[in-house]
Amino acid sequence: MRREKGNAFFIHTFGCQMNLADSGIITALLQQEGYVVADSDATAGIILLNTCAVRENAVDRVGHLLQHLHGQKKRNKHLIIGVVGCIPQHQREELFARYPAIDFLAGPDTYRTLPELIAQAQRGGKGATLAFNTAETYDGIEPVRQSAISAFVPVMRGCNNMCAYCVVPFTRGRERSQPFDSVVREVQNLAASGYREITLLGQNVNSYYDDRAVCDFAALLDAVSREAPQARIRFTTSHPKDISESLVRTIASRPNICNHIHLPVQSGSSRMLGMMNRGHTIEEYREKIALIRSLIPDVTLSTDIIAGFCGELEDDHKASLKLLSDVRFDAAYMFYYSTREGTLAAKTLEDDVPEAVKKRRLQEIIDLQNSISAELFCEAIGSVVEVLAESESRRSSAQLMGRTAGNRAVVFDRERYQPGDLLDVLVTGATSATLIGRLMHSGTHLSVNMR
Ligand code: SAH
Ligand code: SF4
Ligand code: F3S
Image (cartoon, rainbow, N blue to C red):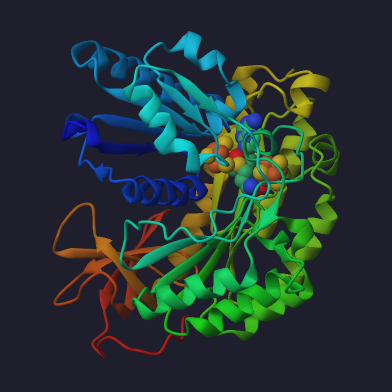
């Protein structure tokens, strides 16, 4: 018999939405085997770290937690610690030497082996399952979801793109898509359970392709939006090369597909994009933006951008600033370059931009983007936006936080409303990250007409 605490697990999730979704799959797999969810580290006999390897600081955060858990394990020698996700796939068995507290390692394609790894650890053995398996899509596993309002649905896993700076192809393996029928079934179940927002996920979500059903991402998105007409449909992350006219037309024509596209650019300079192996020039990127804006005039766009990649000159950096000024993204995730072992850049390019220059360039990018976001948000003052309430606001339980279809955060006095309600809100103020609003008094509507 397992001791009660030994049976309870707690997952710390780091990294992207794919990892969040995977933690739901891990939870389901472990619950099937009789393990139960603990509400914190303190009450868990098994602690899992679902990790991210994309940048050095993401790896450092996991290192700090492992050091802390090492102390906890000294006090409780029955505690079992597993590291899963992208770091084990990248650093492999060398993690055991660096962090003796670890009992087992598993990668994104081997979560079905977790019960066995845990049982082995309970017998005192260390184990690692780090094989890639392109057949694994966790088809048939009903993930345990954190929210009753918003759900993530992974539709493709892995990445074939090999951007020079990026570790993801090495941590997630080759691309594979979930069968069309199984995505549709999952979405039907979510719609029947009353979910109000469904986000289709993939490292390159728009390269989705089901050979058997002969179905690309545009067709999948169209089908999903019809199966869940009362839910907002989102998707992330899109790659510029896979933005097709048919995809843009699908987004434009289906009222419940949110008019928001997250389209990482990484640099405003074609020279840098070439060295990054992104597979397109900046002119081609700008053409995709023009196509999107011509077919979806009220679209909001967001991006990812890296400052200080190998060989980046001041002119390349200026081209990134110019791109931000020209496109006027609603929001951006902004990073300075950090070398990842094993990548093309680590093997063939020199990380030659001094750290102080990387940080200065990043700060210029952040300052510019914040001022653009603030301008765009100020322009929204006086308009009425449709908001899906997600949660109580962080500041006060008398306020709700929700998002517009364009993914802008809005905070407003809640009156009698609850998370999950779809509400018309008059925008009365703005910061660079949040709109402040006041409820209009037409009440909750049921239609999903989302401007
Ligand atoms: N599949 C997605 C996300 C990849 S990781 C995509 O293709 O966009 C998320 C972001 O992290 C990337 O878009 C990139 O901007 C950033 N990133 C990846 N590797 C990095 C590195 N070595 N240094 C700094 N930023 C990096
Ligand atoms: Fe990384 Fe590029 Fe793949 Fe995105 S498309 S996960 S940045 S290799
Ligand atoms: Fe990180 Fe892995 Fe996601 S490296 S960004 S958790 S795919």
